Length: 116
Length: 115
Image: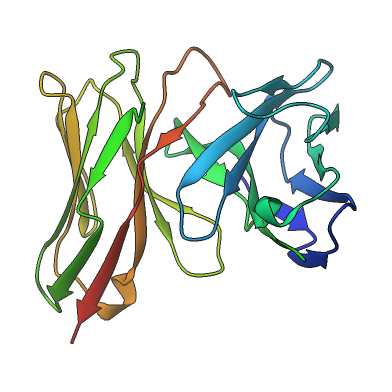
């Protein structure tokens, strides 16, 4: 399996500011995925980050609000820009790893963001 | 349009009993079906996953049953324990090559196992 770490684990931010979340993987991966989980809700895919190209955003998410960097095969950042209380969520990084010889999808521990 | 429908929303099971959670999907392009377990304050942890070339997969106390024609899959937790109390999410994704999973999640089932 892939070992994924995220920083920060949690943060409380003021409205109008921005927060950059880091995701580090212990092995090289082609694609990294960013998900959002609003309080008590399910997970929603924000974007797919492929090293060396622009991230691909899902419907309802835009680059100006959630810029993503993918400088190498083990690292990515997601920035939540101009935050509002509606951005309070858990943000999760996800990558593919192998288990028992098959490819599976793994998640990091998440970054719990509260916007006041 | 919700592409993965999960039920029930919550479930209470006695210790030692069987917990059953069901999911149904609409997109016939889906061919990877994982289940995740999430404890409060933690990220989702992969429990078990299945691909449509098999109808059942078992790992320890956890079993996935898959019905391709009905577009349904379910998670069975045998001998449920209080430590299994968590939220369970089913998910589905098409798969078109290494690293290309884009998961669509069900809304989750909160399982409580009572002693």
